[in-house]
Image (cartoon, rainbow, N blue to C red; front, side, top):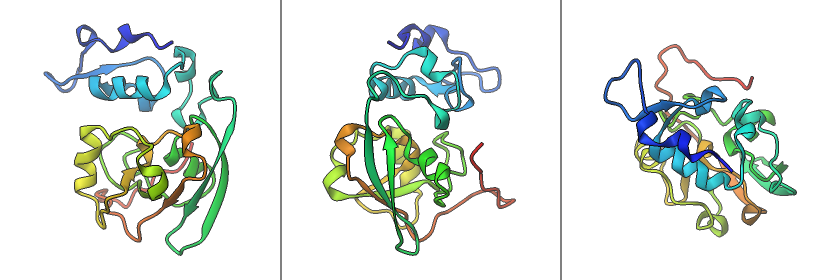
Length: 186
């Protein structure tokens, strides 16, 4: 199990932003700055994951013992092309798209600081997702072409219940990078 002691408020520190509720967590860069709410949500989503699961980058996460099988998901790109993918339980929708060359931007690299990884989740699967964190809702509020079934791909981790889920990319995103930066998978 995850060491929940690693996410207790007494361990919080931030050398840059005094008074923030961020802490440093061992592991990947994506997991190094988590708010308590994010860390608790991640712990709930990953359930039986161990600390060893966080030793690499989030997109390259090795399966946990509970990740024993695959799920089929379909991305629908901006041109309407359907891209079926067989994925591992526990995969992150944003990084899965990057791995397969699907243009799901993710400008903030999954730090919940943008809405460029917005996807429309198929109606049959939308209610099977955990409730979004408040920060995800805040970012979605800034997303162009927001719909009732909008979620951020960086916050969706595949579970067996999401078998057959369809993820449609919106026609546009709003990237606040001035230099036109688009992150690429590592």
